[in-house]
Length: 346
Image 1: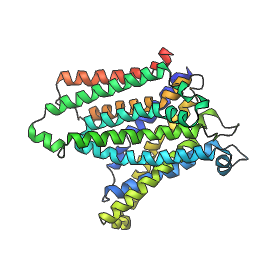
Image 2 (image 1 turned 60 degrees about the vertical axis):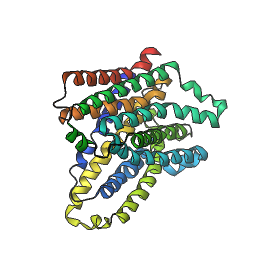
Image 3 (image 1 turned 180 degrees about the horizontal axis):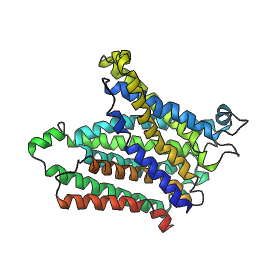
Image 4 (image 1 turned 90 degrees about the horizontal axis):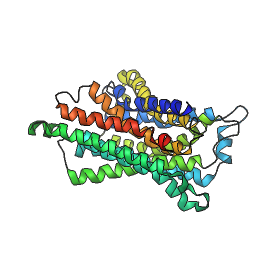
């Protein structure tokens, strides 16, 4: 029963994450770099810090927690968070050159697969005596493989949808289509985005928890470290874009600040909820180490699933053939099944 509860929590977080772009559409008269920075302050800074305090029992402090942890592993978690930030920035470019279906499938598929296996592999390189490779059980590897199959099938459905468009509609949908460049960027985005889970692996191994900290909150300080690392990447890039595009004036538009701040905060909260939920869910997986290792892959798989559901609700698949819809449905079903595989196999 606890496994089901954990999966349900991850599903809620994945749904919220897939919905985070909805409030962004309500932001007025700001450039991308301006609203991306402000929503990032909530998503990668304020909310993770508040979340981390849940792991601090009465009579202790957050500073004490980090002082007692393994400093090298903490810095490694921040470093991989910084690298993850690059993945978030390049993710959008993969959509530009490949389109949403193909770009998202390659980037998130790479992120789900590599993000799951790289953490134990890299930790094993530093600490072979800890035998971190034992986390990569057959059940976990099979689950990752099935997830990649499901995402690939969804990508095929997206390609089928694209082929049904006229040449004029294709150019309008993917104006800058460039397969070699798009593949390179999508793979880079996937690898870099997968660094988030590598950072989580280092942080979870750093001893960032008090004995009194409930299991469901133990991962929140680590999430804070990783997101702060990514926040630095995004701040540098957004401020550079503000300068390059001369959009510093966005922050002086007092008339839209109230509206934009609210929707940036909502977008940030929806985004952060995916990893807040991931931390809570791991507390329900303590009896199943395979599920803890595989949980990041589950989150990414369900994120893809709900993104496609949003696409259906927003009628992005309207007018597609029945064959295309069937292929899409098969991909979604496989992704849902993949979420339970380690528990069913192991």
